Length: 476
Ligand code: NAD
Image 1 (cartoon, rainbow, N blue to C red):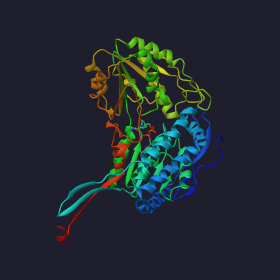
Image 2: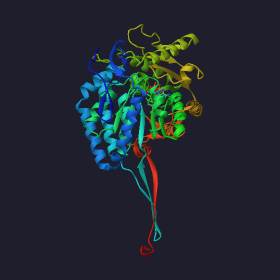
Image 3: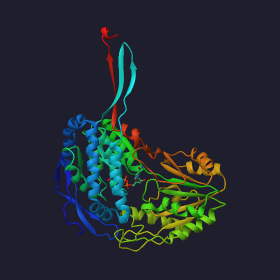
Image 4: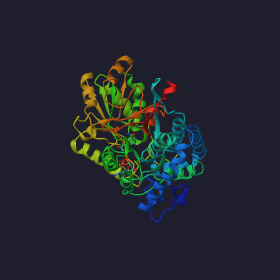
């Protein structure tokens, strides 16, 4: 195997290999590259118990000390970027340069969380009483991450959860457990034992975690279908939940957009990370006045993009991450072909090995088509024509999702007026996918519940507690 070193879970500061394991596959070759531990229920119990016993000490640690340790952890991660990036490309498929960017972003998110403060509100300060609301940590957080950005999306949770004084049991996707397990080993050198536990396993592990009575909050990133199950399971013990779920983001290109200049950013809005981005543009609505010009510019740009093994120099798009997603994307392509939609590029999935799908752009398929209505999460994009702004806003909003959206045009005020009418957690104007650890990010409708990032995101890892002090008569 490419990575002969053993990968361990981190439970209570100790490396635990576990009795059973499963193969992790490189999506560019379909070869097994390493074995990851397949946690038993007992091992999950041990991770939760370790997090519970570490909680009082960590919660009592000064917030500045917690922040300093997060900064130290971020620096340690960057110091080992070469190994982490190589591992991330091998298990996720993304090109090496993108893997490095993800590791740097992970460190940036940890540092961002370390800079956030917990606000306190004085409700009353009168001769009779002092009333103040503060924010206290919840307890043990079960953090569940997906496979598209396994490291940085885990850090979206780890940073604020630890900053606020919680302890964490972190579970990566079974498709991408390796970088997270290595991160757990790194963190064990810096954080007190039990503060951050990592645990890997198969399909049974997520439900065990969300139903576990020793977990107080679940922070989940993944699909909307799984998010519903997580919420249901968490309800048994009224766990707090933050759900970051799927999206079907529209981009709206207005008639005054400089489409030749925008072809490149619009291409990457849809195809970065092979479209496997929750906030990828998944439907591109283009005004009829500029539709043909943008179509030509996008197709010309797509022809310059190199698809291949992410470990090879110059690769811009790697394979789709896993066999399940590969089948799903192929199925959407087959559906488009059966329905007779026009392909501008792509459409012929690679025979293998490797889960490669060529960049596929469809020319104005019907609004009711599967590729427009469903989240594709792969390198296939419908280009859609519109003639009227009110009509396109209605089409953009006619979705159960409401994660992100973008509006593109030269007149910023006109673009802003459109953006304000879109029902999604974030709307970008003349850019997309810009996120910050200092800004709230979350979904409307069935794209999620709660937010990550910013003070609002930090507060999701706390309970509000109001302390009311009656003043002594002598104080009045
Ligand atoms: P997924 O829902 O299949 O899995 C996500 C995680 O949940 C994995 O770790 C998985 O092992 C675990 N899991 C699976 N079933 C579970 C259950 N019943 N209970 C608890 N945990 C369970 O999602 P995925 O395929 O890994 O990721 C792709 C999806 O994630 C897309 O829909 C994408 O839009 C979404 N996503 C959302 C965001 C966001 O911030 N909103 C970010 C990235 C990805």
